[in-house]
Length: 252
Image (cartoon, rainbow, N blue to C red; front, side, top):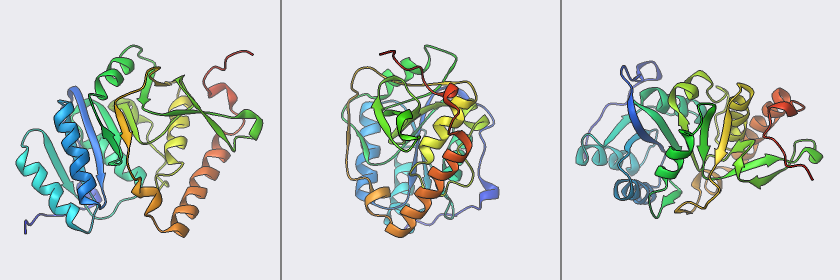
């Protein structure tokens, strides 16, 4: 069994130099087989660096170390004690040494090069902070309690795969109190839009498929529901009614 040191939050690395390119940031929290499948697809279909933030307590920790050893210069692993979702995302953004960082879930699987279209899209406009695979618009007739799928410029990006400009993501990070992912991605989207930035999804479908989303289906149900509600209520309290920050709507 490989040995490695788990660092504290105070020891988390921050890139001293940042280069052109993209880093895929993955939170490792179990499900080693799915992690391996996800990482192998990025290795096969892209040239991106891969940064693994290991907060797991099972064999996926060993796997994340093994992947880094077997792919020097391509994969880097940070082992740390348990962090919540927002602090994990912030850690990935700060540790990445590229101008673009893709925050992705291991359930989002490439069947081809899905990053290049996103990189091209995010670089088209300096006002674009982030792009993603899936986006939604808030249904204003539902008092902000429902949303509908959307393409192009969107209100919110879903956390399956979000490519963000590192500098902007660090300046306007997810809320520090978001311990669970669900609805925290929606809140982060509005934080970015409130700062004056655009969020985009491509008009064409990307070569991606969705496998089992363990963060939702395999989390403790009471914890999942409690933290999801906290995230959504915090988002509503901060942004509901600020319609001017939302994406333009088509006139009907």
